[in-house]
Structure formats: structure tokens, C-alpha cells
Length: 257
Length: 293
View 1: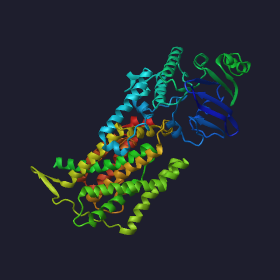
View 2: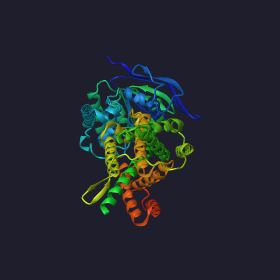
View 3: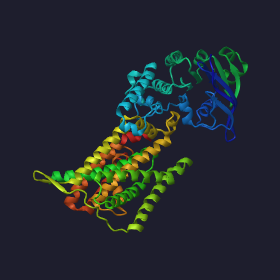
View 4: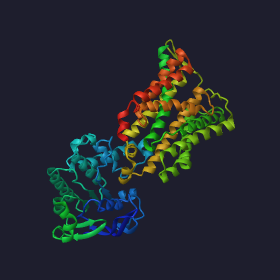
């Protein structure tokens, strides 16, 4: 039995007079992959920013894990298990790859500053657990050999994978990938698809939401797609339905090719 | 002679290091130079002075240091609550932090002046024997104690920042507070932790400065300048750079004072800072700081 993990109702956001997202309705069940596509400026990243509470919505509701999260902070929804990656990678330059992943586990350990200084055996156990967890995420994305490197020494494709590993570290309920294939070559893109499938196999209850431009990726992975254009949802449905939808072809696919 | 000067220099340098690191941790997270640090040091120097005198027989020195550290922590949190928190919540420009920190620095110094005047209060002697000898060399007990305590505190702090989970969170917030929040790190807790650290450092350096130079309202601000020079030379925000530069400054100052006099030594120290700003504005450990920009 799958449950509805994330749901929005009439979500709207305007910047000045420009309507970035208007009446966006979506839902995603645990274990499923859904995609959001649309031309540049369609409001896709705005939706992610609303969901992760970077922006406050003008109207509408967001329901996550059975709770209304519209009044919650970025920190709270992140801790509830809403993880994301970024269109332009946002790794911590100056921390190595392993530490970048451990950052996401910050709230997971149970000791405070006080016990960090005084209860050493307990602290060591926690520290080891966190490290093991971070390493297992790196292994899943085939990054374990780069653990001690600085992310700035890695190629763009690898940096994106580090971001995905970081997003997975705190056992999220929803993983949001913002253009994970942007800047990747075709080979890297097909590798990325395999990784996402691996992730789905390893975390059967994880819901994944993908923003993407690459049609082969989105058509291959997602079982349901929302098509955005100028803030509005112009179509939704299965990949096959979307591919044959004349509105979509006109607004998006037609322009692209 | 040279060895004694070296030890005295490192001992002074260790106090500068405590101040410089207090500066650097706040700069790292908040991106402004916290000039209120000098006021906090003066206040703690007075607090520890009266604490030490309030009991007969006087409490053990480490109790005074501990008490001063706790008071420093309290003052730091108070300044944060009264001054910086509102600026933070409103997301105001950095210049407001700077102005607020100057305001607190002057305010604390003036309050102390109103109550105690500008006289220098001599710290009551702490140890039974002021000096001890190894072979033909005479060491001041206090210099060695200051050096030892400072080293312990600085090592503990560097270890905490580099090896613990909260240290990792501090480093992450220093690099990018916005992204850290999206990772579930509560950056306002980190800011509180930073002011606790800065307050403890101010409290400890306040006692040491009081013991070494006497207690007066401008002891903090004047000595803070040395810590400030050290954190500039070390590269603003870099802890190891600040510690290294502070020890070097202490040594240079001690030798210069011995050979050419205290006033001239201070002029030369500022000359060194100016030279650094010309030649290497990013400081000794410039790479780290560049990354953060």
C-alpha cells in the first residue's frame, strides 16, 4: 500500500507582477518518480523553492508526510525528510566530499556541544555511525574513492552525484532533483539514470521528483509528468500521453527541436 | 636572555591568539569584525579583578578564569540578543553589525570609566612565588600558566571545529548559511554557539590581560587591536592563520620592546599590518578565505 507523501493544492507564487507559479496541483506517492518539465522560466525551480520553503507561497497549501508544512521553516522540512539538489550545484567548497555528505546528517546525531566535549565513548560511537552512513551514500553513487577530495577537484557530473549522495544521507521521504542532467554528456546522463534506478531499488519508499530538460531521461524514469509553461500546468499524465499531447508539442517540444 | 624573551613573547602571543581567534570565529560565521570583543575583554578583566578580591583567602586562579569565562559568555550572548539578533532577523546590511559592534565597544568602555575611572587597578598577586628558576634562567610563573591555558583552549577549539559534528556544522554555515539551512542545520543555533565561544575567549583573555597589564577600561580595546592585527595578517576568518600570526606578533613585539622600546614597537606592528594589507591582503592563509568569498 503506497501512501501519498507530498501534495500541493493551488500553489501560487508571483514575483512583482510576474506570475511564476499559478494554481499548481500535484501529488506523489511513496516509491514513485514524477517529473516536471517545461521551457526555461516556466516556474519549475520556483516550485522546488516553494516546496523546500525557500520562498513563501502567496496562496495554496503544501502537505508533506500528512502535515501542512506551509508554516514550517526550511530547517524543519529538511529535517522531516524533504531533500533536494540544486540546478547550480551548491556543495560546500572547503569541505571534502565526505564532510559535505555528513553535513546533511547534522541533526541526526543525538549529542550536544556539551557531550561532544565530555562523553567521549558515546560521541565516538555517534561519530562512527554518521561516517558509516555517509560512506554508504557515497558508495551507492560510486563516489567512495573520492571521499577525501575537495568537490572543486571533481568534474561537474561527479559534483552532481555528490549532491545526490548528500540529499540521500538523512533518509529522506522525498528527493527533489533539480535538473540533475544539466551539463552532463550523454554517457553521464545514462549513468545518472542508472543511479536513479539504483536509488529507487535501494529506497523503495522514497518518492522522487525530477525537474529536467532531457526528454529521454524524463520519459525513461517518470511514471507521471507535469508540464509547466509560464507558471501554468498545461498538461499532465504518463510519458506516452505527454508525448502525443498537441499543447505540449506546441509549447515545449516543438520549440526545443 | 633570548630564551626568556622568546617565552615571554610566546606567552603574550598566546593572549593575542585568544583574542584573534575570538575575532576570527565571529568573522567566519557573521562576516563582520566584532569590535565589541574589546569591550567584552575589559568587562571580564574588571569582573575577574573584583571576583579575585572578593574572597579572603582569594579563590584559586583557575576558578577566577572559569568564572570570567562564564561571565564573558553571558556578556557575549547579551550583546547578541540586544544588538545583533534584530539585525540578523531583518537581514540588514553588514555595516549595521559593524556599527553595532563599535557602539557596544565604546558603551562598555565608557560604563566602566564612569564607575571605576581611568586608573589602572593592579591585579592582586595570584601565586605565592612570582618566579621560578630553571638553571640560570628565571621564568615568571604567570607567563607559563597563561601559555599552558591558552594552548589547551586553542587546541580544544581547533579540535572541536575540525573533528566534531558541531564543528562540521560551523564550517558548513561559514561557507554557506543558506545551503546549510536546506540541509537541516539550524544556523541560529550555530550563531549562538559562536558567540559562546567568542565570549569564553574574551573572558579568559580578559583575566590574562588584567594580570599582565593591570585592569583599566581600555585594556580590552587597546589589546584587541593587536588581536585584530593578528587576524588580518592571518587572513580574516582563518583560525590557524590567526593563531600563527598572533604568536609571531607576540614574539616580534617582545623583542622590539626589549631592544627599541614599547611605543616604537607598537608603531612597527602597525607598519607590519599595513605592509601585509599591501602585499598580501588575503593574509597568510589566504586561500581558505578566498574560497569563501
